Every structure is written in structure tokens, then in C-alpha cells.
Image (cartoon, rainbow over all chains, first blue to last red; front, top):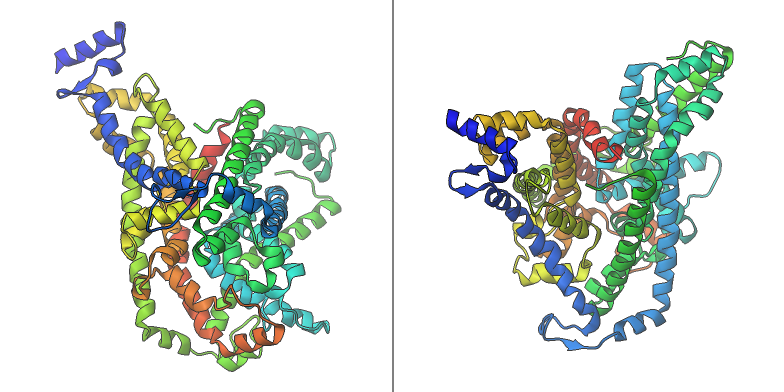
Length: 319
Length: 295
């Protein structure tokens, strides 16, 4: 035992650290480390990496019986076909509008909420509100879509309330003009509490002395928010904004898929739901994987750019 | 915080309190509303009378569900999936996170592994190739398609890694001095010291498994093997995606369906979440802010 310790100490003082040379039994530490990462990597390889090989489907006239490597190679034909489809342009437009709306409001609303919550003096009230607003984040869209169809449905609460003012009942879930707003609104409702967590954390790190000094100098509550709270939040806001840019092609499949129906396809159909219907309902595998691939590639580029910008301006690192 | 008791300030406090209370209520109301519908009489529900309180209070819908074997089998599938899936992925993630929390000097392949993970997190093959892959593996209609096909949630690995890196290195050095190997250090020191982040990740992973419905829709053909959310998706969301409805048809359809029964199913499916949530939520704020605030 003693000799071992001395040996380790000796190594530490020498060229290599104790880490480089430490052996457990006869096998090196590197081997143990490898053993630890391998189960996870096998899993990731089988279900994330192998599907990437399947991308070749986009360049083939794929048929399941012939498989990935037996189907006929057609090059860029699928992409040309996709380019000519008016559906493709429609879903792209819908995706950009829906995702863009969500992106902006999911940035702004949580900030406002965090600032308002930060102004509350009663700690118990603050904690309770916080706990409650996180809740919708953890409920799935399958469940929420059903609840929403009850609330916004023909006999739902919203129509009952509107009825008090003499408005005719509206089928919100079937109204193309209102469906995007409904999607964006419900998504913001689901995520604002959870999104505020990060801003609340940033707010707690503001030096209380700043507020004290300013209020002694006679600054009003509004001025404290305007000149202390907001500027302290800016780095976090910029960081979150930049990082969210990568999701501009993400309309939120789970939400749209569970809430939409054929009467609102014109405004609610997004890339992902369209890919699902083309590929798995209409069995046009190649066309769907082609659209999916385009989306993945553009997203990857956008996310890389946003991470790069976040790294450059906010010193953000993923690891 | 600030001793500013002017009239404007007081008005602000009151208005702010009201706004926040309304926001909080807006998050609770949909759940309460669903519960109200589930225990109200069918007539009251169809007439749209149920708004704030149950009308014609009865547990008829819940009694009906008690006799519904398809519902119970889907609950069992979901529970099995959550337990197996969470155990398996937590184990894999903790094991992966430990070597990856070392520097490149200590674990030579560390940076390569990290870049692979980043790439996998940001890029995917798309729905169709993924579906084909799972089909090739012959996992269709098995519980393993529900557990494995989602792959490992890479972001959570990063959360654990960044927490492990914050642990003081003295802990580990002391353990090495006492002759502990990497496995002992991981299970006896790192894991017990990282309960907040592990609880958070555990919450994310298990909620993820519990809420996932799409894999059930794609890979499961026998209704008896459906997880709960897929069952609900199939039963409740009746508005078929490939038919256009007029307002009248829509109206008729909603009247024919048993909304009270559906609401009861929806409410039951939320219960596990509502039960676990209060216990775990105190951990998760530390957990999430960890990854993002360090920048």
C-alpha cells in the first residue's frame, strides 16, 4: 500500500501524471474508460448513425423489398420533383411562419414573465407560481391536443365565453385563418414557464447592491427594471436568441400532428407532418426522405452557425 | 427587496400579483377543466355547460374505464417501457459521462467522442430512414422498439458531463490514493455527489418515455402492445387527418363521441406525472440551468 502511494506520488512529480500510468490490476485505465463509453455508443450507432446511412434512399427509387443497397439509383431526380411540387413551397412557408412566430414569442414572453416574477416580494407566492407554470412543459401534446380540442371546441369554454357576448360559436380547430395563431399561442403557453427558468437564474445573479444604490438615489421601480434588470439580462437573451435560430425549420411536429386536421392543411401543414404523410401514409419513401434530408441539412448548417456565433459573442460552449 | 412604498409601487405590486396569478391559473385550469368534464354527466358536457365546476357529478366514466382491458394493457406497456427504458438509458449515460468528463490527457479519445455526440445531436437521418432501420432490425411490434428506437438523448449526457466536471478533483484523487478503481470512483463518489443532475435527467428521460406516442404509432401493429399515449392518440383524437370536415359534420361528430370518457382517460394518463412532479421539481432547476448558464 505504502509503496503504491509512493509510486503514484513519484509519478506525479515526474514527467507523466499519475493518471497516465495508473493501472488498475493489469488492464490500463484507458481500457476501462473505453468499456464505459461503449454500451452508449453501440446504442447511438444502431439507432442514430445507421439511419444516416439510410439517407441514400433520397437518391434512389427505393423499394423496401430491395433494401437500401439494392434499389435503383436515380441521382437527384427526387430533388427535382420536390422542387416542382407546389405542396413543398406551401409547407416551407407554413413552417417558417409557425416556427418564426414561436421563436420570437418563446423568447420575449419568458423574459417578461421572469421580470414580473422577479419583482414579487413574497417568496412563497413566487415559488408557487414558478412550480405551477413549469407543469405544462411536462405534459405531452397528445394529451394537450385533446384538452385543447375540448377548450377550443364547439362546446368548449372559449365558445361559451364568446357566447356571452353574443358571438356565434367558432370551430377554432378547423379554421385555417386562425389555426397558426392557435398553434403559436398554445405552444407559448406550454413553454413560457419552463423557458423563464434560465432568465430567473440570470436575475438571481444580479448584485442586490445595484438596486439598493439606485433606489437610494431615487430611481423608480420602472427605472430599476429599465436600467438594471434589462441590461443584466441582455447577454442571456442574446445567447438564447442565437441558439434558437437553429430551430427555424422546426415547426413542432408533435404539436401540429396532434392538433391539425385536413381542413387546416393549407395553413398548418409543416415540413415534418408533410414528410410523415408523404412517406408513411402515401408510401413515397424516397420523396419523403429527400424532403427530410433537405430539412436536416439546412437545420444542421443553421445550428452550426448559431453555435459558432454564440461561441464567438457569448463565449458559449456545448462542452 | 426594495423599500419603496409609494402609491404607484403598490398598484404595481397588486397588478403584478394579479397577472401572475392569472398566468398560473391558466396553467392549472386546463387540467381542472379536463377533470370536471370527466366527472360530469354526458348531457351537461354535450350541452357545453361544464365550465368551472362539474355538473351532474358522477364517476361513471372511471367505472367504464375499470372494465376496459385495452386501457389497462396500454398502461402496463407504458410502465414497463418507462422503467426498463429509464434504467437502461440512465446506466448508459452515467457510464458514458464519466470518461467524457475527463480531459483529453486522461481519456485520449475524449474529444473525438464528444464531437461524435455533438454531430449525432444536431443531425439525423430523418423519419423515413429511421423507420426503415428499426424495421430491418425486426423490432416491429416489440417493446424494444419503444425503448431503443429513440436512441440516447445526447443533450442529457452533456448535462451529466458538465456536472461531473464541476466536482472537486480532490475527491477523486483521495479515492485513488485509497486504491479505488474507475468503477468504484464512479459509483461510490461521482453518482452520490451528482444527485441533483441525475434526478433532473431521470425526470427528463422518464417523462420522455412516458409521453412518447409516435414510436408506438409507427412500430406497434397490435393494439394490445400500444403504450398509453399511443392508445389515447388512437382513441381520443378522432379527427382523421385525411378527411375534410364541414362545421356541421364536426359538430355532429363531437356530439356522438363520449367526451366525458375521453377526458377521464386523459386525466388518468396525467396522474403519474402529477404525482412524481412535486418531488422531483426542486432538483430540476439546478439541473437545467447548469448546462446553459456556465457560458
